[in-house]
Length: 183
Image 1 (cartoon, one colour):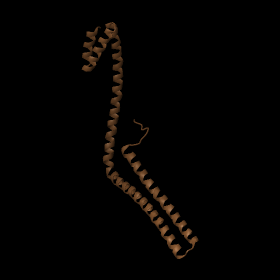
Image 2 (image 1 turned 60 degrees about the vertical axis):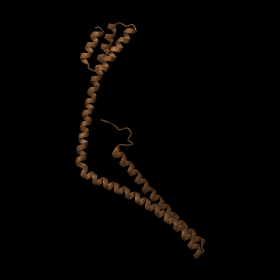
Image 3 (image 1 turned 135 degrees about the vertical axis):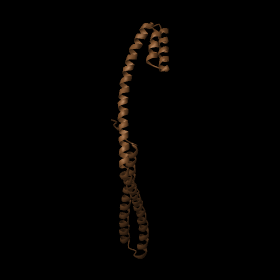
Image 4 (image 1 turned 180 degrees about the vertical axis):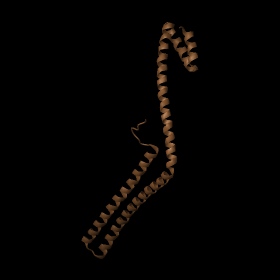
């Protein structure tokens, strides 16, 4: 088989002009390098058979995957349609709970600020009225204990709020997933 016959056969098998131009240029370059036309065509026929085999295998695999993905997408849409009357109110409840946690956390931190202010006020008042240092220190200690409890609770509530938001974002949008398997 010579170059002309190979190119005719290629045009019959394949209509892609880029592929035909590629083989034409490849054969011309190899002839310029001193190889015989017949050995080039034999080598290209072998490569073409191998490439066709790989193409067919990959096409079959892609067809199976696309059919599986389409089926999954249809089932997900059906599931979302039928579960939306339940999921929508649950989503609203979840958002309201998260906002409530955040507000409670802020309220606890605000209470901690109020306790801190009361420490200064009660200290000044006790010193002015009683003059007893022991009573002042006891008052300061009790106020600081209350302050630390409120700060810890406020911090935990706000941390819970931020982790809840993060989990919702990961569940809804798949952001931050690692090692996700695809079937």
